[in-house]
Image (cartoon, rainbow, N blue to C red; front, top):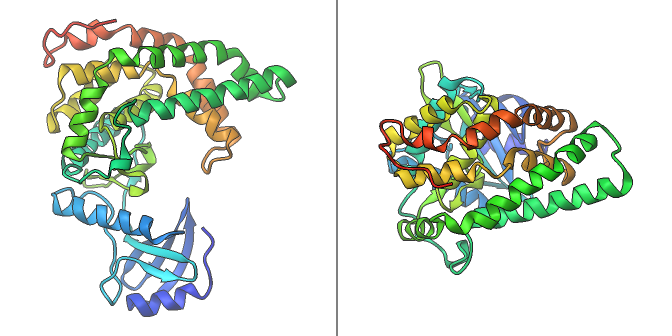
Length: 345
């Protein structure tokens, strides 16, 4: 995020502080001030800045304190307007990003997500947030992601693969498309609609970007969930599917890792056997490959050739382990403490 030079003196005045240095970090800037380290983030519109600051405050009031903490300016506002942008300032959380390859980190992330989900209820739902007579937003997103991937593969078939990643896409495409179409065609068998109505009734929010870098672990063993920009009214199951999908690849699709992560979540916010079964079923959608490749081809921030290539290669190597995990429904759902719920294939 590029900083406007005139912004710093204005911030010093508004927040009654001295700024000693600025360091860019992802899509934000780190400020070193006489009041501690702060993170500054700019938004194009006030509504977005207002939404994230209000959500953070509401979550804190509902008991979820392990999230971003906004600093108020001298007038008591969490939003500072400068030029054509709206800035928010957060206290820096002194923690390490979670590592999905470490099961301890995954379990901490799952517990924190469950605590967030408990607090993220009771937010009145605007009518535009859901498709009442249709599919949950998750399936709409997955469908368009799959369509975009199919367009990418057609283009590669037409012009021939231009690099290593396009060779890989061509090799994996038939299986990825088959898996994607399969879950989208069979999703109506899952009890997602009742989940959707419960979410509507309770006014639940989902984070919708539970990447490992949005969980920060402190030396005291606390885990913080940050970056509330993507938070919105949705099924909270969406977050769980996303977290499990990302971590399972790093855990090489070990059944035990899934069981332990789901147990860590369930201890804080109990899940029904049906919900656990639905999460396992929704993991059939090849989201890791589709997200990374469509992200790269859409030039979305954070998607770079080298990183995407590594991830796609890893997913390719783990195809057999992934298949075994997806066929392990009986094994997963007959374990204690989930009783004798029988897997429906």
